[in-house]
Every structure is written in C-alpha cells, then in structure tokens.
Length: 512
Image (cartoon, rainbow, N blue to C red; front, side, top):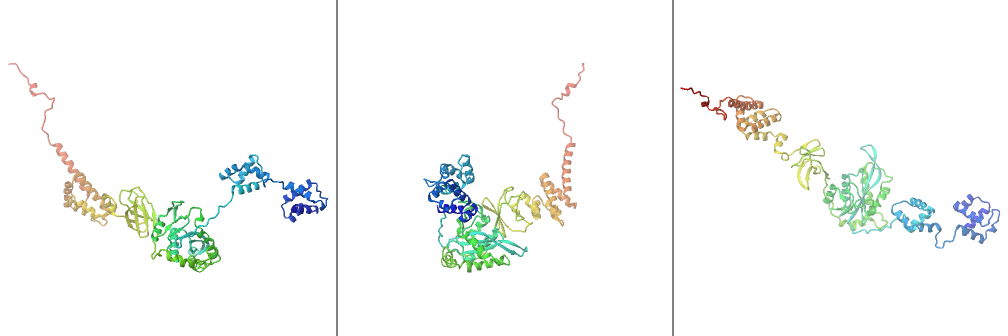
C-alpha cells in the first residue's frame, strides 16, 4: 500500500509516468497498472492528495493484487493443471520456450515468466545437482593429471610465439602440485612430463587419474576404457595404475581441475620466458616455493609440508633409468614377405602374406607378433633400407633373393662334378649375380633331361672351353632328336596283317 500510495502521490503532483517510474524505482508497466486501477476507482488527475484514503488504496490493491486463496494466481493454477504433460515434454529434452508454445496451442495462455517459475519450483527445471565432496583417500596413493592452456611462449626455432600447455599433477591428499609446460601433447611429451613429475615428487604414485587425453586413452569408457598400448607399457614399467576419468566428468578429478586456473594466473600470467626450457625451470621453482608453501584454502595447511611428512615416504621408488617410448603399429605383410615400419622393410617368417601383424618399435629393435606370439626380432635400420633374414624366405627363393652364390654352387654340385665345374665357370664374372639366371637354366635342364645327360654335355663343353648354357640346351635337344631319327630309319620286321590272304589262294592249278 505504501508503494501504491507513493506512485499515486507523484502522479497527482503532475509528474509524468516516465518520471514516476524513475522516482519510485518501479517498472513502467507496474506504474501504469497502478494509475489505471486508481482511475477506475474514481481518482482524477485534478484531485489532491486527500483523496488517497485507505478505501481508495484498498480498491486499487484489490485490482492489481487480487486475493489468492492458495497463494498462487490464475496463471499458476492453469499451468498446474498441465503438470504431468509439462514434465513429459521436459523429459523429451524440449526447451521451456517450446513448452510455452505448445501450451498456447492448447489454449493455455500464460506469461512465460510464470511458466518458468512453475517449472523451477515444481519440476526442478534448471537446478544443478548438489555437489558431494569425495574423500581424499589414503596419503601417497593417488595423483590427478590434467592438461591446461597456459599462454604463449617464444619459440627460437621458428621465431614466433607458440601456445604452451601445462601438464599438471596434483597429489589428492596433500594438494601438492607440479606443472610441466610443453608445446605439444604427443606421447613422448606426456611420458617426459610424467618422468619430470616423479623426479619432482621423489617417487611414483601407485594410482594416476588422468582425463581422456588421446595419448593415454584410445577408447573412452566409464568402466572399461581402452588404454594406449605404449603408455600402458610405460605404466607397467613404472609400477602405477591408470584410472581415467569419465568423459565430460571433471568432478572425477576435482583436485587438479582447480589447479589449472591457479597455475595460469599465479605462475604464467605476466611473466616473460625466453623459451619452453626456461618456462619449465621456473615452473619447478614456483611449484616448490610458491604453490607448495601457500596455505591451502581447503586443508588450511602448506601442501609441501604435508606431502613431505605424510606422502613422500609412501611413494614407490623413483625411476633411476630412462624409458624408451615404444610405438605400436599393425603393418600388412606384402607379397615379398616384408612389412614396412618407419619407412624401412623387415622380413616376416611363415605364410602370412596379406595378414596384418602387430609390430613394436622402441628405437633399437623391431619385434613382430602374430596372435600374441613373438615371431621375429630385428635390429632397427635407417629409413629406406631393408633387413631380410634368409631363413624367413622359401628355400627356392632365398638363394636368388639374397644373391647367395655359394648356396647356388652347392645346389649344382649335387647333380655332378662337371655340372659344378660348369656352374663355377658361369659365375666367374666381375658381376657374378648377373649370371645367376643362367645357372637356374642349367638346373632346369637337369630336371628335363636328367643329371647324367647334362653332366656329360657339360664335360664336352668344358673340353671345348665353351661356356654357354644355350649350347648345352641345343646339344641335349639334338642328341634326343638324333636318337629319335635313328629309331625311325631302322627297318622293322614284316608282320602279316590280319586281313591278308594266304599265298596258296593265288596259285593256278592246270589240268593234266
């Protein structure tokens, strides 16, 4: 009533609706409703303030604030009659604006603001779920890991500024943190960050809780995530377990989430770094002297002191040697029984042409697996080179593929001494591997004409000091044809035909 009386008093004093709105601090539509209700009750602009009696003010209040038996207005009651339908629409992920439109189609025209207040109060629309603080757990057990953008740092190699990401580690129990700035998020950089963190903490946490970064998690899942094979091998080497957070669930790692903006604003902002190495060195100092010695708002303790007293003695031993980051791939075995790894070729044993095998490369060796079994180990060669084990190739192809002249000579010696001598004469050349096809042709003559005939032909060719496989072929071919011609010219004994009559049938008998 005091608010309505003040509006009407200013209006009777000759103030415009705009000026009344400014002086009373109300909405113009509210001021207009008050004035219109007073005019309907008999108030005129020419009246004085004595007309503002309790009866007049009561009549105005009855119009602008009608009595509500249930504490709600007519619009609220109309919406309450559609409660279940509105709940169903919101369950279908419809927006409240769409619900307001659908209600108008049903003939229920209400203010949107009233609908919003009803949805919030009665249906819990737009309310955030309550936050439940998770216990810190045992000291020295868990560390949470996350990437966060820090800012731009100079890159002397390119002469420009690049975005620096911070790989941040936060001990769950003590809140002691470590920041490792990096320009990339590759597997090598992540492993280097973990190695630097273990050196900073003086040990390895048994459990690491990272987000679903691609360098660690290949396939995200709430209960059965698929980890990267190379990072899983690194975790096994260092003795810790990886428990990734769920996708789009930052509350699974809240300790490190709060450290990301803190590191960006307190450590990086306003600083000038020479390069990424300078940024890393200053990050170690900041983590130890500033972030570690501050009084944490939640624990009301200094994280570095709590960590040194309660967590460091419980950590796993810090690594003493480096870790060669392996890379896994699934190359396909080519028809030449080789696979390509790192732009180099390596032979594969067995009949696996067309199959995809698992290959592991660690910088010094190449290990090939088939169905979980190690089938071959090679030393790494430079890109563009090839490493072939003759034992991986078929026997009939290994000699030619490897240009093994000794093996070829031994194979020829099996069929005869003269064949062996003729083979040695063929391979007596400045480029002997260019004559290997002639030896293979000579061995083919052995299969066609027999070892004895070829050995005799080689003996005659050696006596004539002629080294020519084509001559041997012609000698054997002509010798076989000569035998066939000789057999054809030899007369065969005559044999009587089955239809030839006896000679006595043709004799003439004269009468005596």
